[in-house]
Every structure is written in structure tokens, then in C-alpha cells.
Image (cartoon, rainbow, N blue to C red):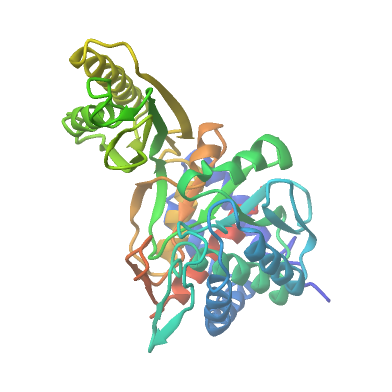
Length: 422
């Protein structure tokens, strides 16, 4: 396929002038987006991605109707890889962690931009993932989070190929695993620690609906806590320490934690289990706990409170029966680093610029996304929404209103072009 190069040319010239100034803070962010829109090739590409929105929605539904529960994203990944190949990307492959990657070479290998969305959902195997449509509204588990993100990644890649725009830098398009639940960002951690280590200059994930820009990373610590004891008959062995009673003591203590409102800091006991029968003292009980904050110090303080509460619960339950029977295992099953890409950083200013250039309202947000990890490494990273309007994310009743959703695809395309520059 013939690819029109706009390097050098009007776009390249204006960006060589504009990008260094943006980095140095010497110009208003809005100027970058406005000048990009002066280029005829860019305007044509934006019109093309808007016209292709029905195809983007078709991709969104197709991917969403393939189960992708945590740690079982393979089937969706296979189809996503096929779609990248159909677009015409180079070196389409699946790495050992399960991430799917495809490349669009620039005039040079660097700067190297990664545009990603996550393959996995929160829904367990066997969930009915069929999507229904009522006018502009799509209904189905995961339809917005993150099937919309995956579809927009595909739309940006397809538009760049069909428009013939060749950027100075290389772009890798990724469908990554492990963003939801106990995935613990395993997909992006592998990318930055193994697969693309030392080769990524800028990272953008597309996750969620609307037109927000997430530049503050909400960190999280997740534990699976298991209390253990000898167990026994509820009558015959009465007087032994009870793991479920210890768990209850811990939950009660956690529920009374005082945490700061600013920075917002949260805690949640999300799942509990254990025991064998109503007339047995359990030999085991467990709970899963999630704690979050955008401030690392606040999260560490909360973590210390949590660990003390669990240890005190074991001590108090044993003391209640004058026993020393219980043990506890606090397994850290999730660790998402807190942090941020400053609002004045070039990547954030570029996102603000293209959002304003397209006539949309700028909203700077905080959240827990795949961008957390590269932020923790000091790599310029943000997450952007994919357009449209979503409701009931992480619920079986999730919906996506596709009215004007093309605005999200346009914004992603314009930002991709802007960030694939020296």
C-alpha cells in the first residue's frame, strides 16, 4: 500500500517548532492542537475516523462478545491480533504474558509511543457477554470498560494506515492483559520490565468512556488474608479460637478506620469466605481487602493500620479463649503504585491541547489504570477516555451510549499524531 509521507512537510515543520516549545512551557497548550488542525492530511484523517465510527462500534461489539475474564484473555487476544493484522500493522505478535502488539513504523524508531487498551474484564467465566442495542445505546458487560478502548486503538491504527500519514516516531498498538481484578497490571509490568524495556518514550492507555484525561495515578494495595486454626466440632471443641471470629474482629476494626478526604484514601473488604459447616469451628477463613490513595504516604499509613488490625484480631481472638492457636497469612496480591504525571508535563499539555482544539471540555482526573506503572518509572504516561457515555461499569447492566462517540476516537487520533513527534 502506498503511504503518503508528511515528513518533512507542513505537519512536520509546525511540530518541530511547536513541540520543543511545549516541552519548555514557552507556548500555550491550545496552540499545538490548533496548528495540527491546519494540516490538510490531519483534517482528512479526522474526518475519516468520524465516518468510520460504525466500524469502530462493530469492532467494540465483536470484541465484547468474546469472554475475557481475568487471566483468561487468550480468546479475545487472538481475535484482536487478527484485527491488527487485517489493518496492516507490522510485527503483530503475542508476548509470553499474553499482551498483543502491532507496530506502525515511523521515519525513526524514536520517539516510541505505546497506545494501549486492556483485554480483560472483571466478569467471571460463563458470564453472558452478548451485546444488545437500543438506538445509540449498547448494553453488555464490559462494553465500555474496556471494549471501547480496544475499538478506539484499532480505529486509530486503521486510520493512520488508510490515510497514509507517516509519523516521525514509531507507534506500538497494544491490547494488554491484567488490568482488572487481581491482574495487578501484569500486562504493562511485563511490557516495561521485559518486552519493551527501555524502548518506550510515551505511553497512553485508553480506558473508560467520556473525554477525561487521567494524569494522577491512584495507587492500591490488595491483600488476601487467611486466618487458620485447628477447627473442631462446634459443641465438642467449643472454647477453641475461631478463625472466622478473628476475621470478624479484623473487619470491624477496618470498618472504623479514619482516612483523609484529601488526598482521597479508601478501603474495602470486598470478599470473605471459609468454614465447612454451620456446626463446625472453621479451620480457615479468608478475606480480600483493597486500599487506595493517590498519595503514597497516605497509602503506606493505611497499610500500617491494616496490618496492625489483622495482627490485633488474631491476638484478641486467642486471648478471648486463653489460647494460642491461630495463625494468619497476609498475602499481597496487588500493588499498583501511586503517582502522577504533572499537569504541566508535555504529554498532559498535549492531551489538553488536542481536546480543546476539537471543541471539547478539558477534565483532568485521577484513577487506577495501566498508566500507573509507567508513571512510577518516570515515563510520561496518561490515560484518556474513549468517548461516548458509559454507565454501570463493572456491572452486568453496563451500557455505552454511542452518541457522538466519534469525538473520543478523533481525540485519540490527534493525540497519537502529536505524541509521535520528536
